[in-house]
Length: 79
Image (tube, rainbow, N blue to C red; front, side, top):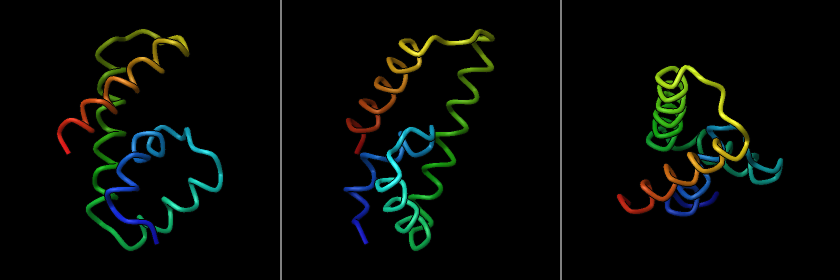
């Protein structure tokens, strides 16, 4: 099983369904044994939904990618 610090880099992509199948399987296996990381995934999903609701607009793929990148960078700085 991969460690929390390794999986943390993938959790946002996982929460947004943006991982390759093998990486998704590795994160799935980790999440089955790690409730704290599972809570982070749910928080990322909740924040993503709140942002979409607050904006009340559809984001282009480029805008969504930029938003995802900004959130991932913020998470990395806080770790």
